[in-house]
Image 1 (cartoon, rainbow, N blue to C red):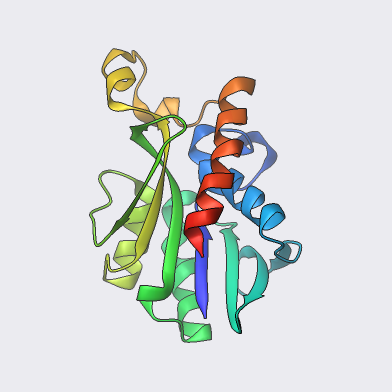
Image 2: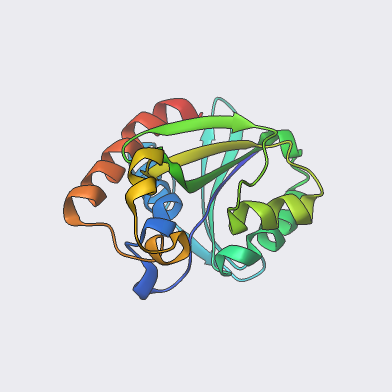
Length: 176
């Protein structure tokens, strides 16, 4: 069994923010890969859907706790389903990666991302796969006037949102 966790913040006011890139990609994966519909699971405080692929169950979840409490949801799900940390993939935004790009990493620090740090803290490990979704890039970041924590809570422009959704197609080929 595998678990894919998308990071974001619950609520309509955060729906199209840069910090919700993980949720946006999860919605694209759910559609393009034929997962069941997301359903609220109050036991895990998450929206969860699933798919069986080659005899293996894959869960896709969007925690409904806020970003900095994501680790609690992840730990509950891993423990309940007895999923090893190595079978966990986390989708999240990354300021240092150019919009429209993504990087896959394993065993890396949170690099200031509170949602990832929450998971590392609650699992007492960083031995899981991360798909880091670019929302800005190091070059643009240098010229930004507002702090990163303000920037990530702003909505994507329509053009940027289109770029992120298209990225879901590329990530879907890498995720399974």
